[in-house]
Length: 374
Image (cartoon, rainbow, N blue to C red; front, side):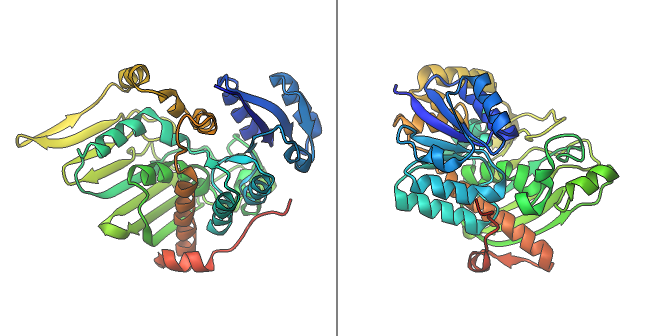
């Protein structure tokens, strides 16, 4: 298949991770990187054998030989950079979350539709083996009528910067909008929305906390003003509900993994986080016996790769992106999934602020931008 020529904007922690992943995809050709830190951009370009380096994204976007760009910036830069790239005629792959608010995410989705270009959001949990197994069971009707799901994500004490991991830009509303919910919760909520076939939210309630001690010097330097623990409850159309718990830092040894409940069966997935041992399982009643089942996900993955055409297109978010640009597979609706995830996140934050349940309809009417001008 033809190679896809890509420009990467941002070579920080996320940009480096994306470049490392592209290195394992033969059909991805990174031809340029851009970052305001020219010295670091040149160092990274040399490391990965990338021929062109820019400090002005406009110069990168002006190149006709670049088909797609990868936006690896902080949340509130996603919308302006993505829209600029789409309007320059590029397909866009953007790091999660889609943006800082639903308003900005919606602008991105609308720009993609107006320009006729593909917009793909990095949602790693959609390509995990347990997600594929869960979707096979759901599509096969083994759960029956699905009525409730649970989204969980666990970190014991791993807040960015103040606990030694990542940068202080993750801990400030000015650049990140939120904390644990919008950083890691997006993965788990999106995973559930994907498996639930993108239901429509109607009512949202939630509470966020920042209660645990942290290093005083790091607290002051970071300007830490986001949550370390988020809780939520979402009502959807068709009598479906979802509860949410997401932690950066909590005094517990772990959470149960995400789950989905149906009239004929239930699924539990491994929690996407640290220090957990739970496995994928399917639960049902057969011949009046309550059955708890497991599956060898590695053997399942091996068999599907040997029997199914283009199965490699679902090995990761970036594998999928390249395959979609090549026309081998249809792009999953990651932008729509990420946008609904953002609506739920906005709803939890507004519910916490007001101390009451809020409606999705009102959220769509009052949402505002937090994007940073570039």
